[in-house]
Image 1: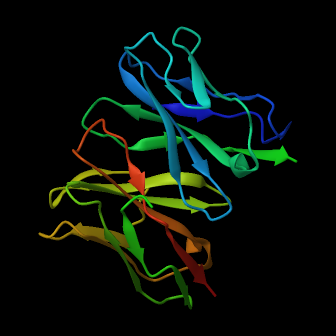
Image 2 (image 1 turned 90 degrees about the vertical axis):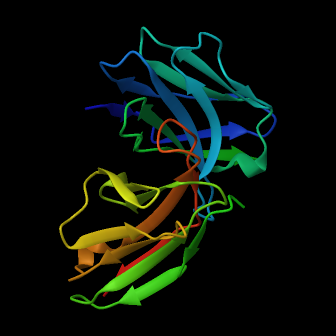
Length: 115
Length: 113
């Protein structure tokens, strides 16, 4: 079974600065997908970014980018130019490429952006 | 707005009761997933349907059941409710059954008193 670990429960960053959220996972599979989801105070789950394990290039979406280290089973999210609207819980998630495409989530990290 | 709708937004009910949560996937999405978010267990996968058929089961209690209808909307039925069933229940949908991004609805907040 796959596991996803987010060991930092909380982080804080100054507006306009850069912050990195850590995630590690454990799997015996070679092909899989990794995601970061954002959950603001509204509780809506919003897809931030996706990474396919077979791609060496790290995914980027505007101010959001990942550092995917397959051998280390590490998948961190970097948020550049942090904005107040980035304040939220962030969840790292794993998905197999098999028939069962459920998401396995980490416990999440609460990010606070200070003005 | 993800395009996934869930009703109701909030539900308050008593122990022992039965409730039904409804989900309409994004237009064109064939797959529906149900997740439970609680303080104790975090976000957990419950069950997946693809084009009307059950595709995968997670940590879903026997008191819970789900189905997906021909118009692709899905319902999650929770019965003999216990205090511990209080949680946020999310529905998510994706284009195909496997390996596509899942887009989440706004969730149904269930409170069992």
